[in-house]
Length: 322
View 1: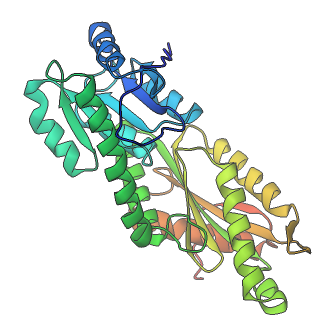
View 2 (view 1 turned 45 degrees about the horizontal axis):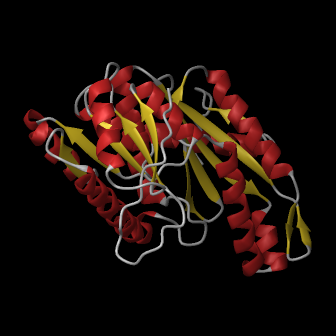
């Protein structure tokens, strides 16, 4: 059950806070959750908004439904324990900084999480509101600084989507998680039909604007836990974790095809393109990382051969060479 609390304002030098910092507190122990609220009440009204979750599944739902500036995370929950709790949150919401709430015996685990992307950790019973507040501000600042650095290495400069390097990393994480929990992951390859004509006839500037508009539509079609990447030219990939049924992938593909079929209005020009989409499913088609990529690519090429503007799953008859 969500508990929203406007907590009292802290004196933060001369800075003016325009909106509350939204905290998602993940803590299954009611006493510890109450103590956290009491500690933060020392800080002052209006600075923070607080949402409380007691289980991992509940946490993931809140992350899907809302926008949070930081997650305060207890690693031991009824439905998840240890480093896996942190890893699942980080995989599901990589854009949100995480501060761990640990016991004294968990410090070694907390240090491991710091090495894998957590921003800070606090030991329960040894902090007050001011310490928590400072940790939150520093965590957000460090995360923003790291994000700026990562954007240069891991994101496409034109579309702001993950690039090929980050795509490989996200796919590897999704497959590792799926293998451990016996889940399915779908990988889609998307190639734009008619993009070369746009570049040749209307110029590269308009072509770049089209790629940016396509990226926005693709993101709109996917869940927050999915990853859409631009891997070069007019080729995009989508990593879809937590797939239950094969038909779910088809639903997403048809949604993307419909979105791409709507005309793009750019600088007074109405541009019409389409997309050819291929998909491969882990572990149904293969359990090998490289083969999954090759399979999705071949399925996409099969969609091109079938007249473009359609979706194809990988199958054994997709064994031709591109």
